Length: 123
Image (cartoon, rainbow, N blue to C red; front, side, top):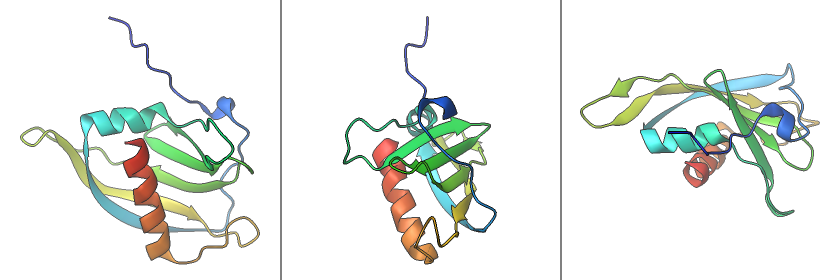
């Protein structure tokens, strides 16, 4: 059986690497296998109002602003399966852009809220 699902790649959208100036935090989330599969597909914007592009590579989800290509988040997934609950659980490290010329937010709580919104949307 072939997998007909489309997977976004780094080459699918103009994007730039994470700058040197960063911060990091940990999110603890439970993901169903289907949610991880959806996140691995990435996200390519379909209209101007869609402000995000993402792709998955080497157990990391790279999240960029679609208009500028600036990398805002890198989620480093630490997969640990819980076969009883069928969830993938663990603490996942997030690297966040802190270059004030690229990204104005400096509040980790706001970043956590924004990131969880995107993970819920795409998962």
